[in-house]
Length: 112
Image 1: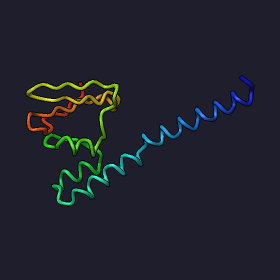
Image 2: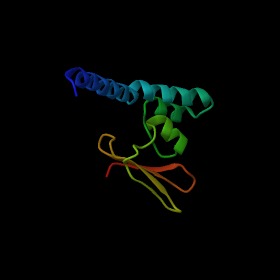
Image 3: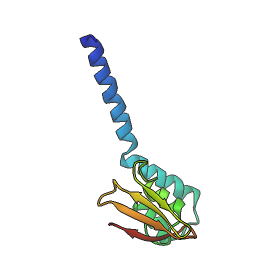
Image 4: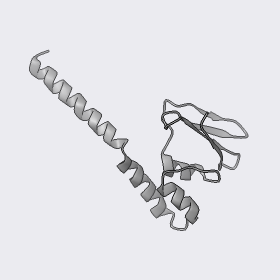
């Protein structure tokens, strides 16, 4: 490979990395939250406030957790049984488990 080809490859890799990182930034989270709240104008004010602040609490639905935090990273485990479902946000500060009950509502948010 020539020096020019190597430099071009490094620049391309850097551009791809920057685009990927931009997708993980706070702007994307804010947009996801705003979109959810705009499409659910009658949401409970307390839940609205939690989503706006990017927080998750007992009583929230799966859809509301997705609005607040997004999907758990694909390399983090998930568990499901007849009684509960657990989403592991393994890269979240302090690692956070979100436990859903049989009705699909958050029953517990814990940091193991």
